Amino acid sequence: MIVDLPINKSLANRILIRQALCGDRLLPISVSMPQDVQILHQALQDIEQNKPEIYVDNCGTAMRFLTAYLAQYEGKKVTLVGCERMHHRPIGQLVEALQSLGANITYLQKEGFPPLLIEGKRLDKTKPITLNNPLSTQFISALLLIGANVQTNCQSPYITMTKQVLNGQVVLEKDWTSASYWYEYLALHDTQQTIFFPHLSNNTTQPDQIVADVFEKAFGIKTTYEKEGCSIAKFQKPHAEKLKMDFQNCPDLYPTIAITCQRLNIPLLASGTEALPYKESNRLESCKQRQTNHDHRMAMALLMADYAVDDTDCIAKSYPAFMQQFQQICPKK
Image (cartoon, rainbow, N blue to C red):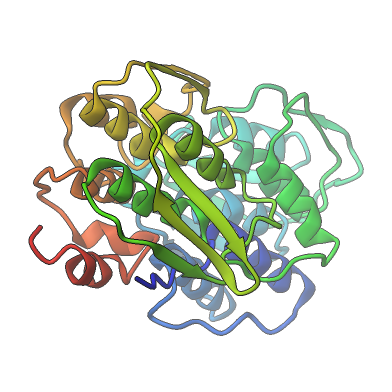
């Protein structure tokens, strides 16, 4: 079976912000790209067209990156809003850091949360900012992308990805997080299928590439790297008796791995989960309840484990082709 994965939206959105800051032409967008990438692309176009309100739905990356981008955009006055869930996702650490550089940002509802009124002005980007233990590494990346002199104790592959984008050392890649749901499918079903992912490489800064190692050691799924991509298949190996894992650098894998462990009755000893309550849903609670809560990653993880879901539209946020592929490969589901 061939599964064509979407591009990695974290990388694509960093590239978009960098292009906008440099005045370059934005990368072309298609409906096959994750909705989060389409949202940021449209927002950047709307900003250039002087629209007074920019809507980012539930795209946390767009909210955080655009907060920094607009704060340093002299002469722009914009209201930055999202859906109801977005207005419950904290952004105070980033706003305070930008305000320390001279940014003019006002909370329009609850202190520390969107929506925001941002009046762009020249910022003192040479002034050192210390931002330790951020709730989201995207706060650090947002500051780095606009050229701020940020100091932090946070070490993350996503920060490394941001620095590589700033140095112009990256190209668009297929998405390892999206691949994780197919690892889950093989682990939970009695099948001898081999799934091939074109252009998915282990030469990547994506932290979720660790899924290959985790599923081989814990769940008996072997990854084979080839010239044009990689393939996965089940091999004879008993499941782990328990799994201990730190999700600090790979929080998006938590639904996949937690649901897989639940179905296989494998105790999961999870650490580094502090950011999970502030994702598209509270993913700790969503996994316990086995509910979608309009969270794209919850929907895919639950579907692969044969649970019913009440919302599949949200999946397009990161993986627009998922439902079509799922129905082709799992026609009885």
